[in-house]
Image 1 (tube, protein in one colour):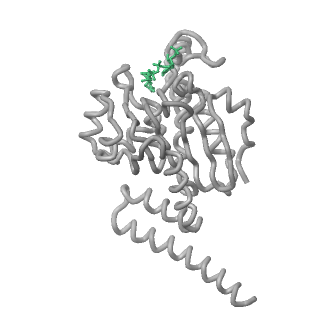
Image 2: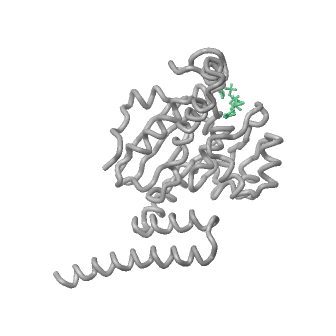
Length: 275
Ligand code: CAA
């Protein structure tokens, strides 16, 4: 059972998103191409809502962008004085309650929730990146398990150049992928990385010609779905914890996970034999 009701098309559109669920595959489209899919706070809280609302039958989540860019990052109006889509801008929130750090951090935690669920073991998240993925857009791609880039992709961690830090859960995957030193260089120069360099830096699992992006993602999704769900979930859980685990701990976790799967297998084959 999903924890929350599926958002309506109107609610999604108000957050600049579309959602399509086709059996085990959910496709989330960043859908403000006229703004290069710039995202607001509402986009991120709606992403969190989507995470809570997906039926357990969904095994793959594809995130893609409408139009020429994956995402130009935060809607820059969020730094202006006016409300954005009926929500107070970040700066207005802070100006109104400058002493209330906890309130600001709570708002950011709500935004981060939109990114964190993409790591959960029961799904594989795939970012299909065409064109620019800037700032929050790059962090969204980094929140996914697998990144498929078209050869015109251009990645940039822009936040420090704007006087801020990347705060949408992007620093850890970036460092995990490229190492601390390269991450410092990328973030503190805010330079743009093209698709080929992204592949060399391990920021992309796959780079394909632009015309082949959809097909490449479809092929990847089909290959992912060919693996039994329980094994996929248990394996992703193991792999995700591996960087923070000792070899002994990891070996223990492998034994426990394998025993669970073997017990299920034995029960299933026992049932078959008993028929
Ligand atoms: N916020 C709001 N509007 C944006 C936007 C953004 N981030 N990015 C693009 N747009 C708007 C443009 O203002 C433009 O609107 P108009 O048609 O009304 O003029 C429209 O989208 C199309 O943009 P461009 O004409 O610039 O399109 P392009 O294809 O030539 O360039 C781009 C695309 C390279 C992404 C360029 O638009 C750009 O550099 N955008 C700003 C990127 C940026 O600085 N983002 C913030 C990153 S930091 C972050 O995300 C996280 C954080 O917490 C700070």
